[in-house]
Picture 1 (cartoon, rainbow, N blue to C red):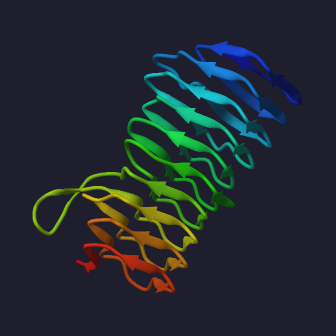
Picture 2: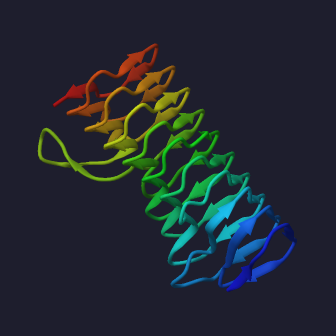
Length: 239
């Protein structure tokens, strides 16, 4: 794969096979076609800061489209077309990044935020087809807003009638997050929003319609839920 080291460089208008690794600061990865990796992420940001991945076509791989790890902070991933990968964007141990205006069509999990607090914004992404919507694990202080998640759902959980239920957005052990103005629509056999051991979250102004279940709360207390539009087979369940 192509490895970009040091500070300040631009990589634009290339066809890049087997991925690209970004280390250091102030890289601008723009308008490339990035594809073809089998075992490594197509875009890897590792211990990177203030880098931008923008307007790229990223796909056709059996691994992650974009992996952000090793305390990579203040990076921006925006306006990319991500398709035909196992995972869309995975952030691990990397706080305060921006994910916005991406179109994501992955086979399994479009966006996963794990142990990554204070994401400044995760907004205006369009997520469709297979796999999850937005999954947050052990991550606090994330603003999830104005995303459209449709047709296909998220991670499995055994529901009240012992069937498998998937979710458009799921929070697990994640506190003090803001979920506003999202559309979770058309997951006819599954659920819109799930909270598991996740408390003190703000959920407002969301459109949660056309799902088997609108919102599921499991050991999740003290969240403020108001001004949402629910129209589902069952709108809410608390366990």
